Image 1 (cartoon, rainbow, N blue to C red):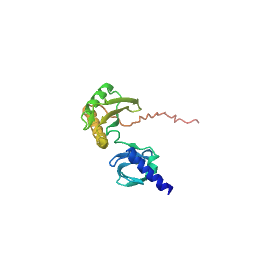
Image 2 (spheres, helix red, strand yellow):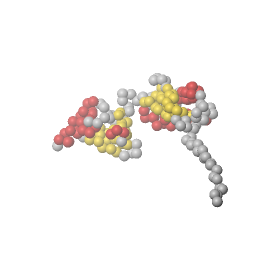
Image 3 (cartoon, rainbow, N blue to C red):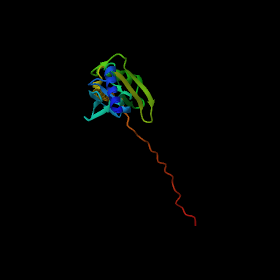
Image 4 (cartoon, rainbow, N blue to C red):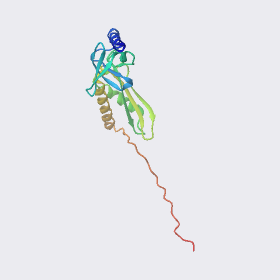
Length: 182
């Protein structure tokens, strides 16, 4: 009975706080459960995962767990796209070209300002990340796909080399003395 009352009070709390709505996309349990809220009931909340499975969470668990709600307070979301270029590439040219390409993405927002960061010099490449915002979190995967495609095509079109992992092996050959001692 105590568990049931805890779930009911949890459901009332969720409704009163307006922390979850049907249609919201949420992430629970440190990202192990992600999906769309399909029902907020008195005792439990149903979440449809991206694999089209229903997870039924007792409301008492939800009220005592961190919930990442992608749609609140507004549907704007930041997109991050990592990419690499070869050593010898002009860093400012890479930044400039990628920023121009990001502006063509559907749902792109000019505020907050997009950025292309040069993060690291790795063994075989220069590591970058492009950061930009789109107006609707439900278009996140589409925006990542479009940005990655556009960056790849841009780098090819501008003849900016895209590195692949490589390892140089140097073989040292020592001559052997074949004469024998008699």
